Image 1 (cartoon, rainbow, N blue to C red):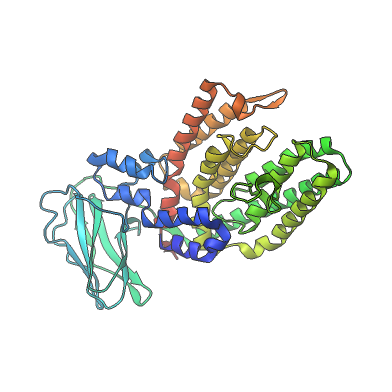
Image 2: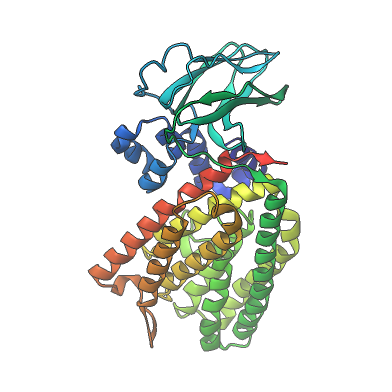
Length: 444
């Protein structure tokens, strides 16, 4: 979560826009998986209600109950193992970290983390063998006490403390006896693995941008030549290439709105001079505008794509932030597709929003493939996720006929329900991935 704040500070309101900024701030205040982490498994219905405020991901949240990323929105009573409530006051001081775990028993319990140091600290409960994260409390101020709910299983544990003005310390190892299964921990990511994943992601985007530049060059040339039928044929492949890049949460900064922005919120709507990019051309090409009217928007799109291709190498984030961003986008891209494409909201005349949604699946698959070396050891539901992605892809493919893609408005009720159900289930499974890499520390 701290890296998410850093990333938001890097991008800021200017880059991701007011609407996405407000959503991101909301996520920081009350991340649904963090909320679910404060609740016992017996209170699953409440966890589901809160999880749906941000993601339709109740089941994915439930699978990560043990990862207790405690935020300011955590609250309410937590059912605890008998005998575990008393005496587990965990103290952080200038001289040491994590003293005071006097009752090492298995079960759901809440540690009270007290900061006796003079600076703010972040306290993490880890597996002392492999460093996997079980729970974390951020921003514990001097002289304050914060709860840390966690489902403790048999094993070896230690508290780790760090802060901007507090050197990293690891407390004493505590062994919980027996053979009781507790919550699932999040493994740390090695620096080498992180570099490999983020390099692969950067290369994927760079390759896609090169293809996009060629396609938009053709599109602009056809419009300038007055070949609007050819331009309509060239528009969709170029747009789908951009969608497959998997941009979300301001990955491309201001270029996102220039290249793929909609007129919603603009004073002049579709006639507003600020309405640019692919959707501007779609509107004109399918609403009878002339080549003369479309030449300017086409040339601007080409200029923006070329500018983005030039700027992209300098826009890439540091490895920890890039990994966090990539993991977050695996969910966000498909969520956006469901909200704007499967609803038909972003159809400006071509009737191809299902094709755009399919491109979003392609982007999600590519991102998952890049993350796969890290996911195979961290996410037990990965096969199920791939299965639901495949089902969703088949349902969308079935809406493509010899005449082209079926507009969303022409789908049958059964088709819409099946697509919505598959997309919702896929999103639930995807929602677990961002938290794994927000919670995971770097293992250098």
